[in-house]
Image (cartoon, rainbow, N blue to C red; front, side, top):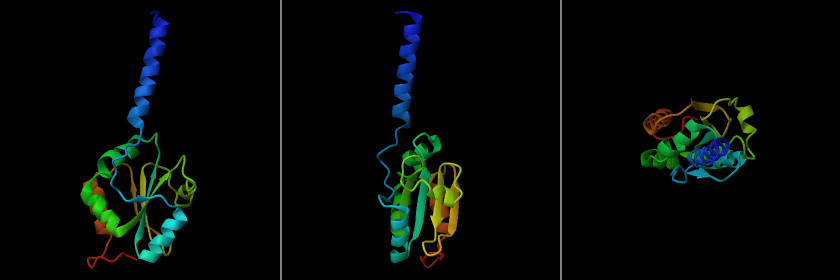
Length: 150
């Protein structure tokens, strides 16, 4: 085998391996709903829940790390399911990708918690967060009686 052919084959194998490494996992237990931003906000109003929006991308390593580590934490998933309407927006694929401009999202991952009544940002988390940190931040923004801060 010639050296150029070996180099091409090595590069091809590297690209294929990278694609599988960056593929988003399926094991997230977060209750992300397959609805639009407007539907999430309407559902939040109806159910008196804040709306948690995860802005992410397939090419974003910290986003994938959160999906594999943070969003698989059972305590965080249970808490999020009970207290938030959760929405995931892929900034490259989602029909709602323009929502990022509305909320000045320029770094990924960005997690926003929004008041569905006013669309006010209640909490903004930027970058990778462990499940413990994210869970603590989410619990910290709720009143002791369990009702949302709005």
